[in-house]
Amino acid sequence: MQYPIVEIFHSVQGEGYHSGVSSIFVRFGRCNLKCSWCDAEFEEYENKDLIDIVREIEKFNCKNIIFTGGEPALQDLEPIIKELRPKGYKFSIETNGTIELQKGLLDWICVSPKDQIYPGVSIKQRYGDELKCVYVGQDLSIYDELKDGFENLYLQPCYDELKDVALNGILFKQTVEVVKDNPEWKLSLQTHKWMGVD
Ligand code: SF4
Image (spheres, rainbow, N blue to C red):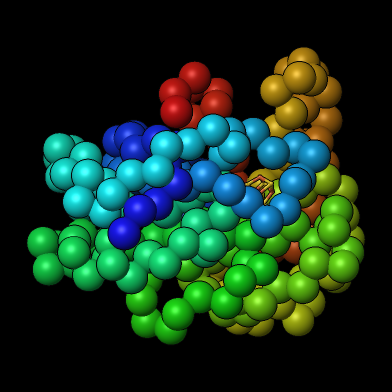
């Protein structure tokens, strides 16, 4: 079994509910969307065997795995999980939600929908642990139905590396105001970008 792998690395989760938690990131190649702000490099990857992926993961002193991408739900994750779960690993996914996930397979589901820029995109994964929405000024009522399926709601200001600090700051401040007016949502910041780490 082979998977398109961009990179496998050990770092600290920089955003959302598990901010600050030591994690192994498995970044898969390919995505079914093309978001204008996307900062993930997923078009250059290497096809790797399951056994080699497992070996790479086991090199790190960490048992938390985050499947990311690209779009990790395009992959059959079960063989990787079956191999590593008996060794004590836990599995999270960060997905755009356009593909329904197998029930009970993952320990933590974070859906980050892109429907504010793709009005026609339908979200198939309608429940999970974390709903993390990139904020670009959209009306939060677009999440009225979807949010009921999630335990934790996050708004994350879109961080554009091509813009200077002041311009990004305007959107950060707007996001803070929206969170103050809508307290069921929490603020998520991409702290790893500020720290200059992966
Ligand atoms: S869904 Fe995620 S990985 Fe895919 S293009 Fe959009 S931001 Fe990038």
